Image (cartoon, rainbow over all chains, first blue to last red; front, side, top):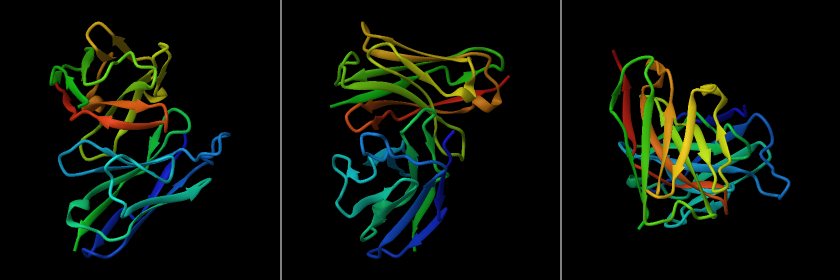
Length: 112
Length: 120
């Protein structure tokens, strides 16, 4: 199985400040079609996960443009340009290259 | 508006089978643009992918569940199901159904989840 490793696991952020989450995979997530198969999900307290970013850098419908994704191969990053109170929750990266699809351990973002 | 609604027993006894259904509204489960999946999340842990079924009938399963799991679709009811045999306490989790969008290969819509507790 592909192992996904996130850091940090806890991320306290002051509103208005930027935030960054790293995700590293145990093998390359680059498909032969040129896309890197990494998605980012946010699970707000008491809710199901919802899609933020797909194929490394594509924002899902309705996701604010303060969220951005980047990376290639085995190293990926989710950035929030200016954190807002509604961004609290646990962020997960997930590899969609090959089953079993696997998640990182999660990064808990909290507001300072 | 797309809605996915899980339904299940709530409590299952050890060694017995677990059966869950996901009712889909606002989209056809027969669409070739999507596949359908189950995830689960044990208390206090991260999500785990369980299974996916495609329009062709092709299925993928998480090997960690060995041969205990089966996913199926009922197009007449516009719903899909998960069956898990011989449950143990380790199967206690919130079970989510989700849609996999083939363009973008992402799980773009999730249900609210159904808690399943394995208990004598």
